[in-house]
Image (cartoon, rainbow, N blue to C red; front, side, top):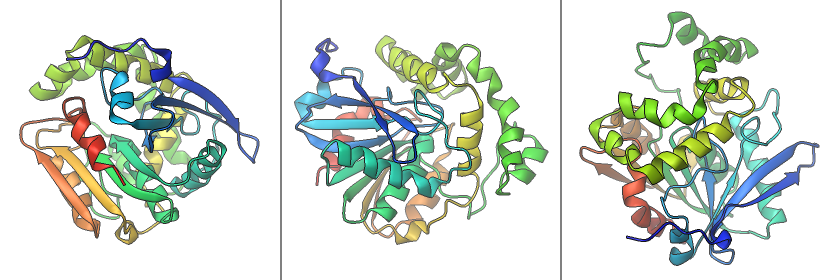
Length: 296
């Protein structure tokens, strides 16, 4: 076991980029600045501070350069009213061009799956491998809606209207009151495997930091992000031709494994990894193999 690194070279190395349309994008880098690039597409809510290891020094030891930008409205990135999932690859190109990165892998956790796959679809010559951790398919296929979601919201989420975000905003508003306590809340409501993982102090610190930063601008951007995931993503997932790895715990109570199986079945070149008895945050126990699979 490694003692968590305190070397500033291991990250986060933070930066901001002014995009061509005038918006500011914030991002963080972890690991080896000369390592193989992996674009992290963070969850929802989350931020550029999302990482998948307790010790950030692991990225340097593995030769990985993890680059995680804040999506619009999360962390310190400016909102982008009316944005679509398919707008994300354009932002990514501007960021990675500015960093001198050509070819890269994408890795997503949970709600980041749509964005990782959108990059693969839009940038087939630059994205060589995709990783999806606990991700769901686009809503072009029927979803088993969670019981807590009000019927009015279920009826509206598929409509491409600003009203969708407005309906979801009060659902997520309580998360913004004390976001640092979100890991403790998840520990209480998720399965035993996730409770064990989140019970580790280093994991809890990682999640508290990324949730708090992700929600610094309030619930509106989270509501918009979730609304986008509930509507068709704007590209055929079946046209993603790169190798896609899907990792999913069979006891994931946040994104049920059935959704992961549907997503895997939609992808032409998918290698699925099903972890019996594990949950949504299994990556903290399997990060080495996950990052090894993303090598070009």
